[in-house]
Image (tube, rainbow, N blue to C red; front, top):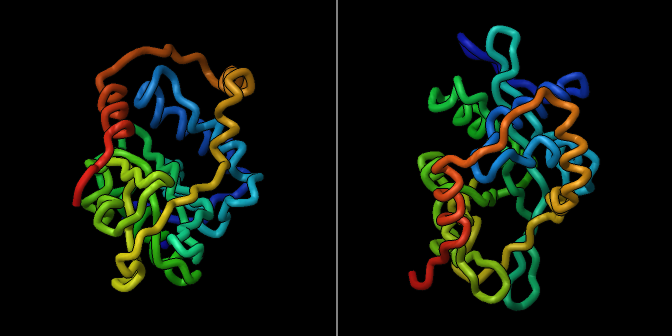
Length: 219
């Protein structure tokens, strides 16, 4: 896809390190001191739930300034019926290009492709402030929750078809692809391959903590 200013295209192997560095720049100190998104991306590409057909970058003047990836996930209702969904993330845009519509362009492009692939529901765990303008809604509105009837404020649902979800309770089962980030030694070793950056605190980390630990108790 081409625009007057940018190009959206599939990620290729030659983009890998640039995309990983992009994620590091975009997420550094945002939700915790340092970040692990660049390592998550690095390991995600070889995971069984990774969807390469939905891995895209956005280029501006020959430079990759943003990327998005998706994994396979599932919704399971109370009778055991299963629905195949996709989980979006990470969505990365270089800090100097954020709030300029590049993330929106990546999402709208890949939403159309996901629908063409037969998916009608996209899940995301993130800051609602960043995603509700793209059509995401609270998981509570679609009766989607974690096991134990937990409806996190950060669990967001985007339907690609109006009738994608019918109101029954669905339990969200994400991929385990992010479990690799629990290996802190491997993460630190990978991070050492990049230029040094200083880990520190900033207010966005408390914002992330509040969103990720808050739940919605009633409709």
